[in-house]
Figure 1 (spheres, helix red, strand yellow):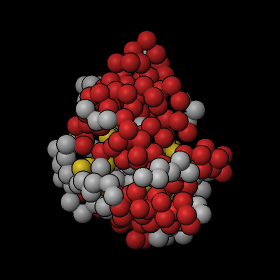
Figure 2 (cartoon, helix red, strand yellow):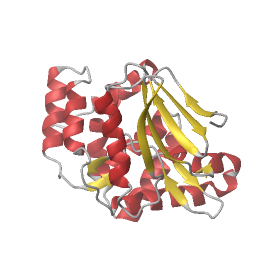
Figure 3 (cartoon, helix red, strand yellow):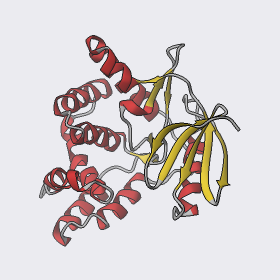
Length: 249
């Protein structure tokens, strides 16, 4: 066995590089069903012609579940944006183009986005009236089957030395509406304190995809409510503000 290079280490997981492979080692209490669902997501997306890491195996290491996938060498788009701010607009355009290309694909066996968000709304801790209004709005939105990442941000795009873009971290992947995925990305920028970038991103997404901003806005309260189910205490006030913006039609 080679030396481990830690990529991310948290209480519930550790991601590290060893022998040219990436290991995601789960916490001892992590449910096996969640592990295999995440591995299935990566396997399903790997059946498309998108550039994604190949799933190699699911195994136990010292009694803990681990998912192992192909290591993609390169730098993240987030790192490039930070290191070369003069080219930021160029990188942001590419970021949106990668997302739009992803949305042209479908993948079998992925969770249905609307069903997943309904579960998260129920677990959001919002009052019954707000949950009802959000759930009703969600039921009225189109049930698309586009490949949605669910955590699409520049840190999850790796650019190789050959300038190829690989999309990583498919644990939140679903089949659903592209505008929901865009609303989630907007929210991630916003929660990171990058409001101006969030607006610039969404403007580009709407222009390039020929999508009305008002349509994406319909998803913002929904994705904010779904984020409440896993958001940090520091994010909760902001999420509540967006989740409680309910249109009564």
